Length: 392
Image (cartoon, rainbow, N blue to C red; front, side, top):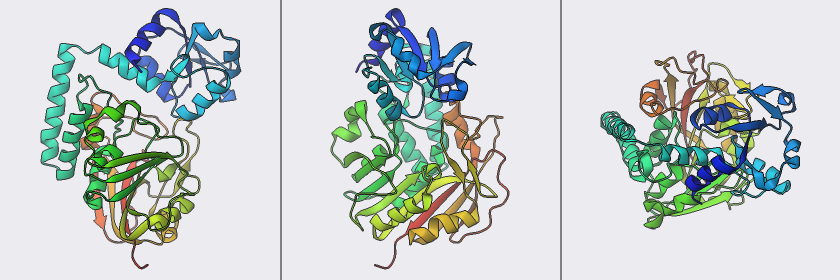
C-alpha cells in the first residue's frame, strides 16, 4: 500500500475523522496538518466534549456518514480492535480507514528537506559513536537500526522504537546470547511496527513473535534481514496465558515491557516456564517502583503494573518455576524536564533517541532479590530480570 498517495488523496477529497482522543491522537494531529471534521471515541464519558477544538462523538455517528466521502484515521494503540469495529460497520481498511502511524510516516517522508537530512545523519552518527563506548550490544543494535531505516531520509518504513528500548533491547541480547537456529519466543511483539524480533532474526534465530492481536509485519517483509533468510520469523496471534506450544519447546524467551500490561501476570509467567527448554533463558523487562502499584486509568496503555521487590519474587519468579540468574535495576534520571510518566503520556520527538541514552543509569546488578530504593516519581524505573530453567 502506497501511503503517500493515500495521504495526498484523502487531504484533497475526503472528510477526515479521527478515532481516539488519547495522547496518540494529540501527537498525530500536532505533527500532521489535516482538517479534522471531528473525533470519535469508545469512552462514553468523552462524548459531546471537545478535543483539540473539535467535537467528540459516539462512534455510532459514523453510520450516518457517506462511505465514499469520509476517511477514518485510527489514532489509538488498539488498531486490531478498532479495525474490527469499523469493518463491522461496513468500512474497508485502506479504502475508508487506516492507522495513524502509517499516515504519519508517509507525511514525514514527504516533508524531508536537506537541513533535516543533514541534522538526522549527524545525530545518528553521534549516537552510534557514543554507544560504542557505552556497550557492545547497544552499538550493534544502533548499527542494525541504521541499516534498516534508522535514518529518516531513507525511503523505508522505520521499525517501531521507543525510549526505554535503548536499555532493554541491548540488555536482553547480552543475557540471551542468541545463536543461529535457536528457537526464541518474543512475547508482546506489537501489532506491526516491531523492532526486536527483526534484530533477533539477524542472529539467524527462529523467532516466534506473538501478541494478543495479530502481528502484521506488512512492509517489513522487504527488509534485508527478512529477505536474506538468515533466520525464520513467524508472527502469530496468541494469548500468552494459554500458549499453544508444547512444553520445553523454546531455547529462549523474551518479554520486553509487556507483562506489566497483563491482568493475570502469574499465569503468563507460568506458561513461559512451561514452554522453555531445560537450561533455557528467559529475559523480562518491566517498570519498577519502591512499592507495588497498579495504574488502570490510562486508555492508551491499559493496565500498568509497577513491581516492587516483593512482587518480583511472588508474582514472577516463584510462579514461573525458574531460577533467578540475574537482576538489574535501572533508575530514570529526568535530566530534560520531560514527561516520561505512564500516566502523562509520551511525545517522542526526533531528539528522544539521543536523550534516552542519558535517561537511565544502572543502580544495581545482583543475583538476588534486594529491596528497591525509592524510585523516581515517574514510575518509569526499569528492571531487567534474567531467569533460567533448571531441573527437568
